[in-house]
Amino acid sequence: MQLEQDWQGFKRSVATYTRIPLNIQWESPTKHTPSVCFLPWVGALVAVISAWPLLLSGWSPEFQALLMMLSAVLLTGAFHEDGLMDACDGLVGGWTQEQRLTIMKDSHVGSYGVLAGIFCFAIKWWLLSQWITKSLWQDGLLFVLLGWITVHVAARWLPLGIMTCMNYVSLGQSKAKSMIAEVELRGAVWIALSMAFIVALIGISAWFSILSVLVMAGIACGLYLWRRINGYNGDSLGAVEQIGELLVLFTLLGWQA
Image 1 (tube, rainbow, N blue to C red):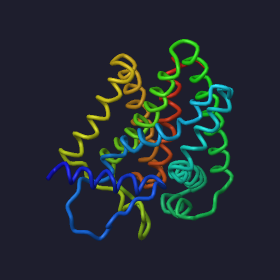
Image 2 (cartoon, rainbow, N blue to C red):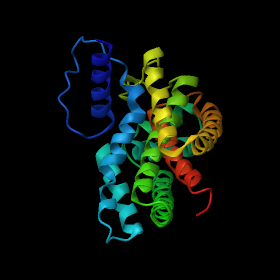
Image 3 (cartoon, helix red, strand yellow):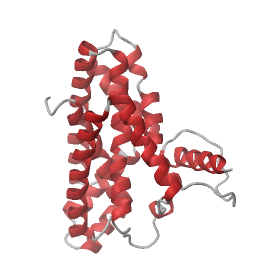
């Protein structure tokens, strides 16, 4: 019975955080584990599907990295990237909490958002291409894939941490609010299992390095969000996920690029 609830929660998570078509009965009263608890596992799914360019060995690492990133964006519908750009427009461009939240609800993208998107994409492309080159040379194709999965799973721990430790803030009705739920014991188990999964993939030493970096980043992001909007919203969660991807890639590279 509980596994069925978990399965329903996972399907809702896939339908919510990706563009993968699933037939979900959203109005069904059937009990399910909160979908947000499966966010890291959705990241693993996105990573595996978007890794298809690695199968084409004749392509350069730079081109493979570009197509992997593009595939991930298409799979998620630029869900996190959109949050990053909106968050940068509001958090940097607004003068008051209300103004910042208003800007983030605006569907238009400003100069801060555009610049954030460009630089985030460029840095991620460079780091990923370096990871592919280094891993193919030293450890082989499988290790490249394991690193890519690690990036997408671990980066999603960061918004989960923000959600757990801070309050949600918004102006009026918000679609993001419906995606947020309190993480209870069973949901926490699935998040913990995603951490154990990463330990199995890359080892305890690399996992601890990544987790330490993400904890420090989470504290820094949390303090910044508290000063700017007294909490978090959907866009800021997308922004910290993108920050998490960059930090995990950089950590995997040993802070060398």
